Length: 403
Image (cartoon, rainbow, N blue to C red):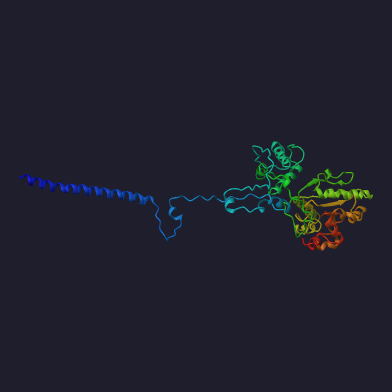
C-alpha cells in the first residue's frame, strides 16, 4: 500500500477517537452538574410566593406534639377554711369533688395557708386507727402534741383523749375544712400531720352580730373561734359557773366579767352562769332528752307530738344561739331567776356592756322563741345600746341597719 494512503487513513481513524473522548467529557460534566443541582434542590428551601400555609402543618406528622398535663385539683384555699369555720361549712360542702377523680381515688383536700406556716416537727408515721374520746395511749399523746404545736390545745400531752382534746380536734377540723365531729380518723390525721395544716392562728374573727334563729340555722359543723373556759377568765368570787369546763367567746366572757363586777359594786351578787357555748351535738342531745321525757310522762303521745312540745321550750339543733359561743344563761343558784333583783339589774344595765336580753315576750313573733329573762347575748356595746334605745330585737336591728 502506498505510504500516502496509509497516512490518510490514519488521520481519518483518529478523528472519531477525539470526538468520542470529547463527548465523554461533556457527558461526565453534565452528570456532575446534575448531581450538584439535585443536592441543592434537596437542601435549599423552596420559596413559593403568594401562597400562605400554616407553619405547623408540614411538620405535624414528623414532630410529636407537646403533651398537655392533666388538670390538677386545687386544694382548699385558706380563705375557704376560715369561712367554713365561721359560717358552718365543712367537709364535702366546702369544695365540690370532681366526680371523675372521686371515682378513681379518694381525694383529701389539704387547705393552703395564706402565708408560709412556721416549720414544725412532723412525725415520721401517723396513727391509722380512729382516735376518739375515752381512748388513751401513745397515739393519743402524739395527737395531743401536734394539737399543742398548732395552738389548739393548752398544757401538756397526757395521752388521755378527754373533753379538751375532743374540743381541740373539733376546732382543728372546722378551721381546716373538715367535718367537725371530734373524731380523729384517717382524713383528719392526714391533714393534721401534713405541712399545710392550718394552726389556730388562722381562725376567723368572730362576727358578734351573727344571726341565728329558726329560719337561719347554723350547720352542724359550725364551731366558733376564740373559745375559752370561763373559770379560767372569771374569778369564782365574782360568779359561779354551774358546770365545770363551760366555754364561751373570749371577748364576751371578758365583757361579762366587767358586767358582774359593776353589779357587785352596786351591791348585787350571787351570780351564776348555767349555760354558755353548746355544740350542735349537745343541743341535739337536749332535744332528744326532752322528747324522751314527754313520751315517758305521756304514754299515749306520738313522737311527733313530743317533738312539737319540746320545740316550744328547747331550740332545735342548729337554731340555738348557744352554738355561737356568744349567749349565756344567767341565773341565781337555787332560785327562779325571773323577778329577782339580779334579773332586774341585768335587764337594766346589760346593754352598757354589750349585751341584750335576746328573747322577750313582745318580740316572740319575730324571734320565734318564748321569753327567757335569763338569756343574754353579746353583740358589742354600740349595737347593744342602739337595740335597747329603740326597743328592737336583733332581727329588727339587722333589718334597720341594712345588714
